Image (tube, rainbow, N blue to C red; front, side, top):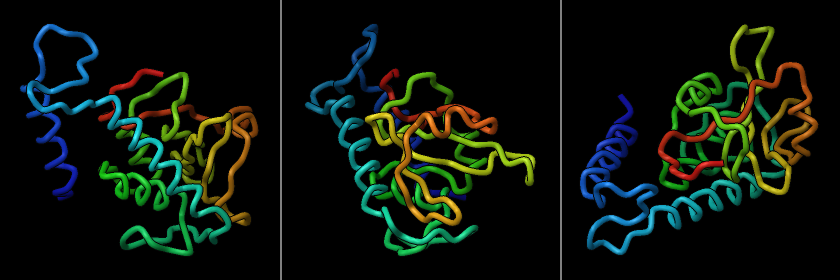
Length: 171
C-alpha cells in the first residue's frame, strides 16, 4: 500500500471540508492564509526544474530509482521522482500514471504527455510538459532530453495530455 498517497488523499479531503462553502475556485482555507493556486504553481515549477536538472543523464529501460537522486532514469521513474520531490505522490509506471491522471486539452507546466506502446499494447512512455512548447523526458538512445511539443503530438502513438488529479488549475 502506498501510505504517502493515502495520507495525501486524506489531507486533500480534510482541506476540502475546511474551505469556504459555496465558492467556486476556492484557493484559501478558512483562517489559514494558505493559497492553493500559488502552492500549485510552486509545485509545477519545481517539477519542471527537477526534470530539467536531469538533462543529459542516461536512460535505462525499467530502471527503478530509490529516492530522487540518480544518474540513470526510466521515463516514469523520472516523473515519479519529480512529483515526489515536489511533495505530490504519484504512482509508478507510465500506464499507472496515465490511469491516475485526468485528461486535459491544454497542458500547463508539469502536466504529463503519453505515448502508446504497440509492442506492449499499453501506455509505454511519459513526458513532462516544461512550458514554452517543450517536453522533458527520459528516452531510449538519447537519455534525458528536452524536445519540442510538436515532435510528439504529431506522433501516431500520441495519447494526449493528462494532469495530476490533485491539481486544481484548469488548462
